[in-house]
Image 1 (cartoon, rainbow, N blue to C red):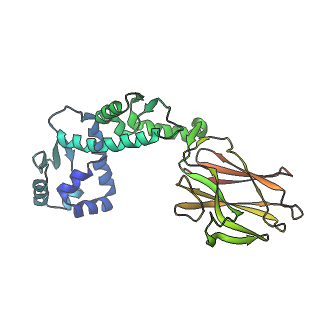
Image 2 (image 1 turned 135 degrees about the vertical axis):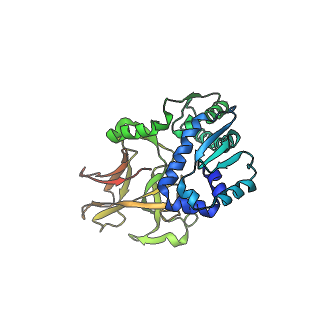
Image 3 (image 1 turned 30 degrees about the vertical axis):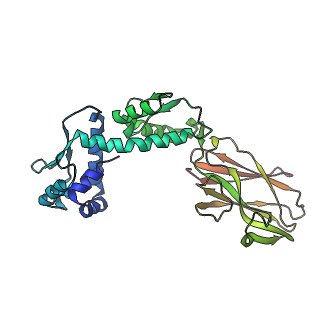
Amino acid sequence: MSTYPVSMFISGKNAFNKFKNDYVEDLYELSSDFESKKRDVTLDKTGFEWIKIPPTLKDLCTEEDILKNIQDESFSDKVKYVSKKGKLQIDYDILRNLFENSCPQTIRHVQNLFRQPIIKDVDTILMVGGFSESTILQHRMKSAFRNKRIIIPEEAGTAVLKGAVMFGHDPLVIQSRIARCSYGISVYRDFDATAHPSRKSILRGGVKKCKDVFAVHVKKGQELVVGQAQTSQRYAKLDVKQITLDFDIYTSSEENLRFVDDPGCEHLGQLEVDIAAESGKEEGILVKMIFGGTEIVVEAENEKTKKVKKATFNCLG
């Protein structure tokens, strides 16, 4: 949600793109100025608002260019450039349209969230972030979710920042969260010609196996209780001569993934576990994942010796 569309039209696309790339600080100032105006934009307010144009943006185009660009647009009667002030005078109808165009996207996103089984029964919506201070968005949200309780805290724009500070001091302040990605381990499975592509076929321990299979430990959309282990899975040797088991950890934004080399799948790292040479294939390793605030701990426990090895991976998913 920004004043970029109007600013780009009055300055021209080329000038505005150069401004975005070369004058980031001024771009931030322009955006902040617009953000501060949002509290004044209501459904019925008339008149206009002032938006200051940074001198660096004005230097990239002439005043004649600005006036011409405004005249060429359909909103020319509602946007004026006052050169003495170096500001745009924008009618509230234009500002309302900017917000109105963003509201449906926000509502659709929330509606999609409520289609997920894990949160379909949630009856409260907490609106935070700068856009939540828009009375237009508040009105649209209340109209779209009449069966929900909608809470808008004071200083909703800084609520996210305050939450981040609290989280930094105590990551366990968040008791659970929804996994934004799937997490798993690369494994071998018995090859099935009806389900596996031939390119994945490989012989391991004299048995035809399918390689690169994504063994799911956490599925996208699953609730993760912070600090608690997810369900453990058992792994064993493929070959009696093995003295280590290498667990390659992967993550993907896809909910249903087949192989670790599918598009969008990323390798997080590896956990290597020693296993006795004399042990048979029946000796297993139990692997579980524990999610903290910004990291994931993978624990591998030897079924027989009870020896545990851990690896930690940074993960914000």
